[in-house]
Image 1: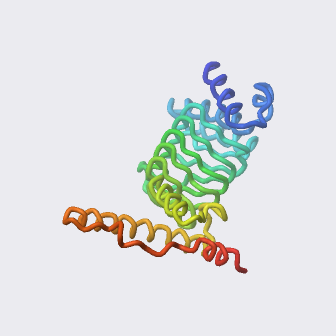
Image 2 (image 1 turned 180 degrees about the vertical axis):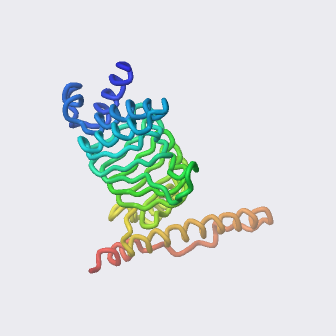
Image 3 (image 1 turned 90 degrees about the vertical axis):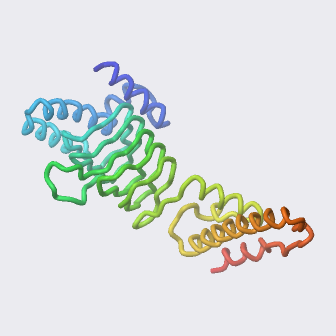
Amino acid sequence: MFDRIREDIAAIRTKDPAATSALNVWLSYPGFHAIRFHRVANVLWRAGFKTLGRWVSHCSRFFTGIEIHPAAFIGRRVFIDHGMGIVIGETAEVHDDCTIYQGVTLGGTSLERGAKRHPTLARGVTVSAGAKVLGSFTVGEGATVGSNSVVLKAVPPGATAVGIPARIITAETKENRESTAKKIGFSAYGISADLDDPLVQAIHKLLDHSAAQDARLNAICAALATQGVDCASLGGTPVDARAIEKLVDAD
């Protein structure tokens, strides 16, 4: 037990620069307290003392502002930062090294008793402030859920989910966008990364379309090269990056 406590404190100090000492974490971190309460409540629940387990969970909610159902699975080195308003449902699973910020809900969309109704956060997932993850799906290892997003479907490992309802941005999509942006001397991420601003969404779609067109043209040129046609001599019209920047800066 004490090894787990030391491990949790070390994880908090690693992830939070404001954690100046182990004593500071022990005395004043509600996320740390909520997990300690939950360990007790979970043992009672699994031992068949369900009412007592719920009572311990209720006390934890009263003292920390964090509600974790005693049946929920909480892994090792889970960091709950600030924590006020967090709700973690009965069949939710939060695996090792996850980070959860204030106002997060890991909720269900079904009333079927005994079924898996709540989400699973795989190892290393970060769920940002105010996000709602609703349903019995998995958020893949190392994924990130953006602030105030509403996630209603599975998130692949390493991806980012943003928006209402959340759209999935994979690492490959990010890489393609940045690669295309560098080619034309402009990056939408320099303005407002991954936000729901309509202009940013439009630019992202244009970048995605441009990347897809580049891939098709490269395939066509490769096919023509096998027939002895040199595509390098065809040339092309460069993109006016300054014109795009003026469009973005316009009020």
